[in-house]
Amino acid sequence: MKPNEFTALALAATAAFFLAVATYVAATPWASRLSFEPARLLPQLSSRASDVAAIEVRQGKTTAKLEKQDGTWRITSEGGYPADPEKVRALLVAATEADVVEKKTARMERHADLGLADPELAETSARLIRFLDKSGAPVAEIIAGRTTLDAFEASKGGTYVRRPGDNQSYLANREIAASLSLRDWAETKLVDLKPEVIKSIRIEPVGQAPYEIKRAADGKSHELVAMPAGKKLKYVSGVDDIAEAVSLIEFKGVAKAGAADNLPSKGKATFTTDNGFNVVVEFRSDDKDAYVRITPSGEGDSKAAADALTQRTQGFDFEVPLAELRACIVNLADLIEDAPA
Image 1 (cartoon, rainbow, N blue to C red):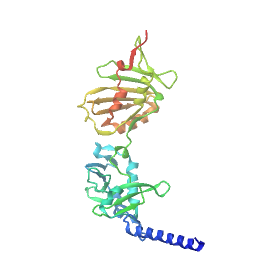
Image 2: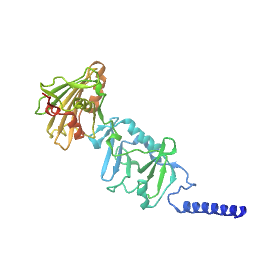
Image 3: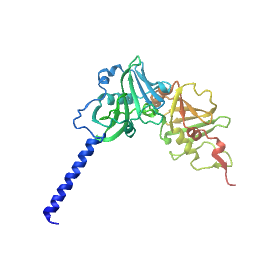
Image 4: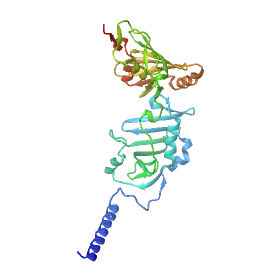
């Protein structure tokens, strides 16, 4: 093939390629419209942000609701537990400042791929986010779908969105993070310590003998205060496992205090740290659901931490995994065995 013939063929192939791309871009509903002018996602929220007194997030048949009460945001769908104000503020700022920057599909059958299917469907991943005033009337609302990481620049993502009653979808230039997950609205760790700072632990299983645990001489591990004669630990890490369990207690649900009173008591774990921080963790369970009630106290350097935890936990029962109960409330008989003769 002559050089000029090869060049002509190459140019023809390139032209065909770009023609195909242009045809696809013109036909596909996913393509950005280059003529589309960015616009504020929720302009009414920008002008009425101070009127927002409640936030609802609906997904399928479940709703998470937050309300502002006496200046404090509370998760009313979770017994009125205090929400993290910074997490609420982050959502309000993102929704207020978000712009729609690209048009996406208007075809309903494509919405699911963007996480924008009907938010009322049982299996949907779409979230209907409603910002309400004191009367419960909507200030603004949006359906939020999948987020995109680094969509605009490093560490700056976006969210696929559409407005209720409108099939046109868009890409917004903010991550609008609103979910039904409790941990997305509140600090769910009740106790979060290093096991080695725990000086002593008392375990009181219901119907069983209580026992004491202390930090060992190495300053890191833990041991029984009194090992019964002729006995030894079944597992070398058995006592350390208990210390680790009481040092990190995280809840997955919350209810008003007294909600768990109908469940049988399983016992309590009490621990004290080097600076005098003392926490009593009471467990109740029907072997299907497990709840704890926390009673902190402290003097001197630990008083501030105890007061802060009291403020968070007073008036609430906290649902924890059954594994948490089983890791903390261990019968002494299950911890030890006969020592070799």
